Length: 388
Image 1 (tube, rainbow, N blue to C red):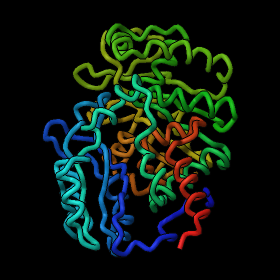
Image 2 (tube, helix red, strand yellow; image 1 turned 90 degrees about the vertical axis):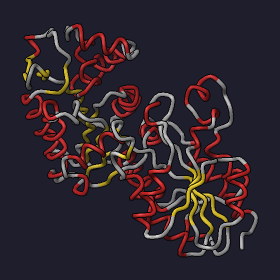
Image 3 (cartoon, helix red, strand yellow; image 1 turned 180 degrees about the vertical axis):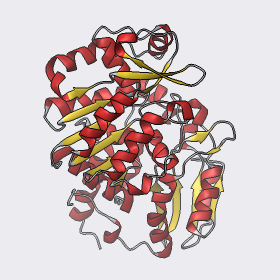
């Protein structure tokens, strides 16, 4: 794929200091404080090794958590330890980002050495609350504006996979959208339905529940209170509008499950219910799996329910297993989606496993990505300057 950006093949890295911006934002086990999934870390290893073997002094920048996910806003010490295990050589760590400690440590690096700085989200300018209210030039692209810049191996692979899904998917193309971060799902749904990219959208999780509310179903006080408290009630009108224009392509649950001292399934006609909805029901699973088996392209973002608990894991496990076994090309993205695939032993059987999160959603929503545009500008500058 020619995306108009430079790659690692375009540079000689020996004895050069390379700033490597990684996305290793990982699910955290909040009981232990340790990494719950290391997929993003694993997929960054080839680029790190390639740079180290080429003689670069590698300085890694990364974020973890955010004000919207504050419990995962933790130090990158576990990430450095996991990198050291996977890379097979020391990944040093410094508890600093842009201060004198980091600066002095970078100066001491030797060719081939690896250094991970601490969580950039510890800088106020990097957290979403600050960015949302104080409009600044995106810091993620700052280095690419002043230094030669290239896309790493993982970046190029993901851009290629997502471009295929977005611009030229094999048909039928099915999107499986669930989870709790329904802003992502609705952002994608409007574009893929309006432009005809998706032949079917299978909704579950809070996304599916909002679709039911938009049609006048009463879900029950616990679930409706959860949706209201999360500030998601505004999506009901958006769901109603999507159903008005694309009802024949949007599938929503026809039964759901609650934890009532064990799994109990509830048909739509038996709603509302006095317990929190935690999963889709078996009837919905059967309907969705039939659509998935016939798809040529399958994009997945967001689990069908609370997959971490046995009582509410059925929907996600069945759908993910079907996707892994389906003949169509599958692309799965989002931290919880990938963690669920690992939990159920099917991650390695998916067609392509994305590490990108918000960037993936924005890309599939039709928005320009500042990083891609910055890399293209850097390429034009580098080529125009007659690079050696």
